[in-house]
Image 1 (tube, one colour):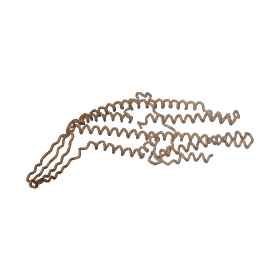
Image 2: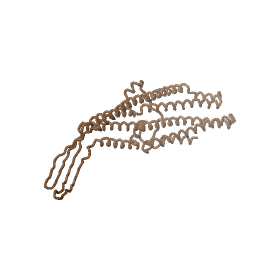
Image 3: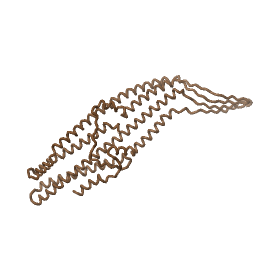
Image 4: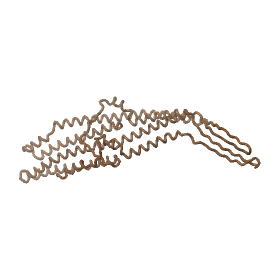
Length: 392
C-alpha cells in the first residue's frame, strides 16, 4: 500500500514541467501555443484582406483593332484604346466603411472562438486542481486506513477480533486504493487534454486550492458594464452597423460611374488620337440593391435586439447557478468544520465504545461529506468560469 501511495504522489510531482503561475499562467501559455488559435488568427487576417480586396479599382481595359480595308486602295485601319473605370469618391468611401465593419465582425468572431478554447482549458485546469485536492485527501485516508488495517491484523492474530471485522477493514482499504487509481487516471487524462490545447507542450498544475470567485453583487449593474465585451453582442452590433453602411453604399451606387482613357485611330495617311470619357448609369440595378439593403438592415437590427436579450438571459441563468453553488460551498465548509467526527470516532473505537463496523460507517459519512464539498467547490468554480468566459 505504501508503494502505491508513493506512486500517486509521483504522478503529481513528475508531471512534465512548464512555467506558469496558477490558472491565469496556464491560460496565457495555452493562448500563446494553441495551434487552433494560430490558425484562426491567420484565417482572420486573410478574411480582412479579402474584405478590402473587393474595394480595389476595376481592372483597366486595353483594346486593339486591326481592320483591313476593301478595296485595298483605301488602306487598313488601326485602333488602340486604354481606359480605366472610376467610382465617385462617396461610393468608394461607403465601400471602405462596409469593409471596416466586416473587419470588426471578423475580430468578434475570433474573440468568440478564443473564449471557447480558453474556457475549455480553464475548466480542465479547475478539474485538475479538484483531483489534486481529492488525491491529497485520499492520501490522508490511505495513511489512516493502513494504520487501522495493521492494528486490526495484529488484533486478529492475537485473537482479540474476528475475521469479519478484519475483512471489513480490508475492504475499506481496497476501496480507497481503487478510488486513488481512478482519480489518478482521470487527472492524467486531463493533463493530456491540457497538453493538446497547449500545442502538444506539457504543462504542470500542482495547485490544490482555488482562488475565491469574484461574483458581482448585482447582476443587472454588472451586465450593463460588461455586455459590450461579449463577442455575440459585439458581432451583432458590428453586423448592424455593417448593414447600415451597406444601405448607404447601395444608395450611393445609384450615382453613375465614369471611365477615362486614351484612344488612337490610324488610317492611310490619317491619324486621330485623344482622350475618351465614358459614363455608366445604373438605371435598372440600383433600385433592387437599395430595397435588398433595407431588408438586410431591418433583419440585422432585429437580430441585434434578439442577441442582446438571449445573451442577457443566458448570463442571468449562469449567474444564478454560480451564486447558488457558491452559497452551497460556503455552507458545506461551515458544516464540515462543525461536524468533524473523525477524532471522536477514533477515540470511541480505542475506548471500545463502538465496533469497527460502526467506526467505518461513521467515518464513511464524514468522507462522503468531504467528497460532496470538493465536488460543489469544483462545480462552483466552473460555473463562475462559464459566467465570465468572454472576459478571459
